[in-house]
Image 1: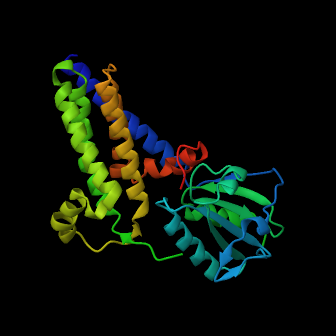
Image 2: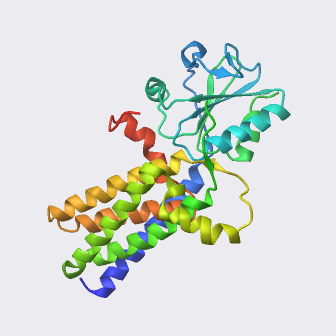
Length: 147
Length: 150
């Protein structure tokens, strides 16, 4: 193989990196509306928050975050949503680690974490946010709730 | 949940940069029959490095040591820390890819080594320059396919 062809292939690889990187940056953290009407089942999720099993959702907006042990952005996402929860009484943040809950991974069709589901007061899924949510995405999502 | 080890996220990204340069060299050398042996030898070195990272974590990896000794003292304090487990998992994915590459080389599959090196180049570049951990991203997908158990 000639030197030029090899350099050309290397350049093509670099271009591929740029394309994948740009696509990921553009898509991650954005909300996708869901109109399936599906509701989450709190009993099945068995989320423990502050040492207690969660049995109630927010009367307004709940951000349900799915995390795993091998997730770069789960920690920062949790921190971000907790800050939001503290500053806005309409918002509740719930987090569940699904590393050992393959049943939930399949049920909610989770391909990557963090995945955040935006729930209304009945637990109906309004939208899905894949990756670390962008700040303006969260503002828009809360705005959709007509609070 | 137990408190997990937190590390400076710039450490793994620094390591990924070196891995990226190494994988570019391997890719380049693997394209020619005459230099394929050199590429395979370098790939074996990469595999050993990934093995160290997989078993001991990225902090106790040679690149982690380089980062702590020569790079970190010149940087400001990290804005935030990250969990040590995702980059460690990514090391395991890197190990898997380099073993596949070496197996393809030994089986004399044409360009097998080059393709594995290209995969390594892609993943390490995304980690180093974009901050996107491809190995971590694959975790749930692999679990769902039943490739491995927790």
